[in-house]
Amino acid sequence: MKKIKIQILRKETALDLPLPGYATPGSSGIDLYADVDDDVVLSPGDIKLVSCGIYMAIPEGYEAQIRPRSGLALKHGITMVNTPGTIDSDYRGLISLIVTNLGKEAFLIKRGFRLAQMVIQEVVKADFEEVSSLDDTKRSSGGFGHSGIK
Image 1: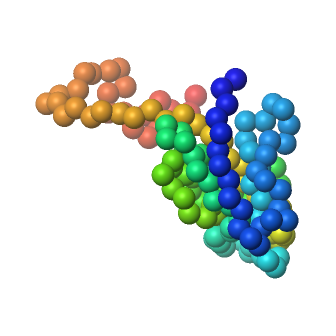
Image 2: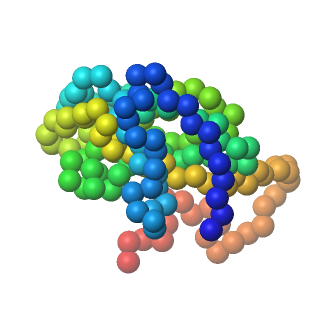
């Protein structure tokens, strides 16, 4: 298994929160914690920005993808608006989550709550070449729903 080092800086107000970490040895997602001073009520339909209280230096050639936690999504309808969210290697700002409630009841976000997961991915860069035509395929320009539901 390939490993890389990622530098993390915590906000002064977030020193009491755990560093991001893997919940189990087989986890690919790293838990991110809510850095909120007071409980945050996320009503159905709300979208809020929630700080994780950390800054990171991701090595060039990698990105961090932010994803919802499956249990929160299933049980409460809590998800990320831009999922997966991307943190680029040259970003050095505060890591925050764009959280929404698709559920039917208000959800309470407490300090230190495991709200999302982060997956580190290698990045492949593309070189684009403009051409006058593209090769044809069986699918061709068939778009949304072109293959049916059965």
